[in-house]
Amino acid sequence: MTIRLLLADDQDLIRAALGALLDLEPDFEVVASVDRGDRVAAAALEHRPDVALLDVEMPGLDGIAAAGVLAARLPSCKVVILTTFGRAGYLRRAMEAGAVGFVVKDAPPEALADAVRRVMAGQRVVDPELAAATLAAGDSPLTGRERDVLNASRSGASVAEIAGALFLSEGTVRNYLSSAIAKTGTRNRIEALRAADERGWL
Image (cartoon, rainbow, N blue to C red; front, top):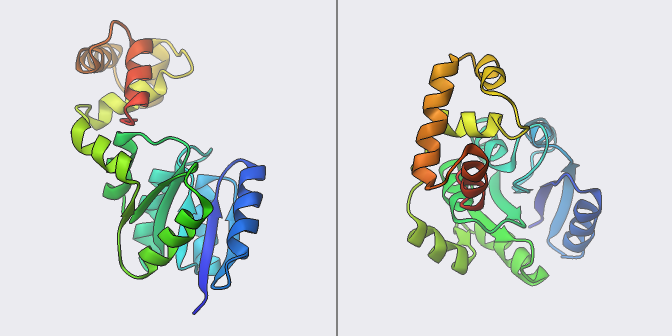
């Protein structure tokens, strides 16, 4: 049986190398390749892959959000998150979004091929070190709105600009930022953003 694959990664070189590597496997066929998260669902609906390999950080839509869209629109397609960022919070969010595998990019090539075959056999596949780190880290303390406000502050936007972008009052934005700073144990929103990123909470 041939396993049909979709690849999504915004780095052309990585995506091409992955495609070439996976095409060497006798039972794999790469049927679609996209460079943005917001192109994943359309490509999957057109090409009907069995497994989608999604990078986390992509323009348009991140891989975890794309996994959620894919789970809703094409539930027969199994999602494996393939990323450089082995962060505990990413794993938890990926599984909540419907992913059944999480493999870090520095894993050996045979580990990726094995992961694809295992998810096709109905198993969940998770990097063991990351699974242990996720259990140790616990749940993200941030609410959805606190995550939104921190993400909106990435570009150095002012409180007024964040409020306008998220349709909130400036006072509400300040409250969410203060809460996020307290929950991350940091001193300001820049540190809070960095800490939340490092823990995979955003």
